[in-house]
Amino acid sequence: MGFGSKKSVFGGMGGGGGGTPGVELNLTALMDILSNLLFFLLAAYAAQATEVEVKSELVLPSSASQTRLQLQLTVSITQQAIMVADVPVARMEKGNVVGDMDGEGNIPGLYAKLSEIRERRTEAGRGETAEASGILLLADKDTDADAVSKVLKTAGQAGFVNVRFGVIAQ
Image (cartoon, rainbow, N blue to C red):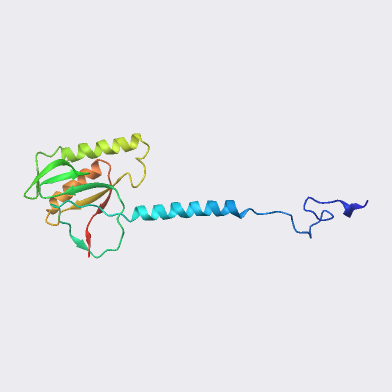
């Protein structure tokens, strides 16, 4: 036998190519993987297109923006209260926060609640993401800008630096 008479693993004669490999591709497993990937992509897309339920005493301003809202921790400013996830943390009266501010100009009840939430997220390992440091601010359209400014400052001091404002789409 000569040099070229050895059989290769690809089924042809000789060691130097030219033959087609005898490899079969199982498409069933590939289709299963692709269908699972498609399912999770659709589920993730559907989860982003959520709407926020607005309380009846809260009248949001309107906007022509087409950006979709991402679900985040909600801070609401109504004419009667400041709420975190629908739990009142401070009272409002005539557009002003009722009660004393702490030495840094923060709203004490709001700061305490946001700090607690931030600490729990950090302990759970979710404190370093952009979503973990974000809030959705729903402010009544007649809310005084000074009150909104105090809420923003308090949220920033508590570690919530990414703020999005909720509005009603036109």
